[in-house]
Length: 194
Image (cartoon, rainbow, N blue to C red):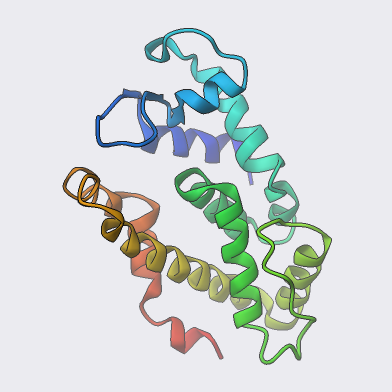
């Protein structure tokens, strides 16, 4: 797995500059909000925010800091989904999804000890991931991916109810990226759980 390719895909989906009045993120370029850019030392106009700085932020905040580099060592497709989810919903939310999915698929805590859903990928989460994959094999990564996508779909469907200001502007666009994969992934999850 090449993280640079993943980041290029994310930037490609996020696009260039935008500053939509209904977007709570405000001015954004390459999918990086002005608040995040400022927190990482950028002081210029967001219309000129350099792509290489966006790449560095994605690598640091959405790949290394949440531990997706360690997830990728065992489950590269899970790591790819989690970076995309992290960009859209926050890295902590993405980490919580994988923890919840691991617990839900743990067959009553018989495969490995259940883990706290602390929204941080640490040693216990990685141990549970390794345990899950060891018991479920290659198909296990697909099952876990579907579970994470189902959790994301559930959260995505709840967004429009958060307020009328965002509903008309962004709801139609959500199903074009990871949300679309999440909604499609929800089908048949009950069959994969076994």
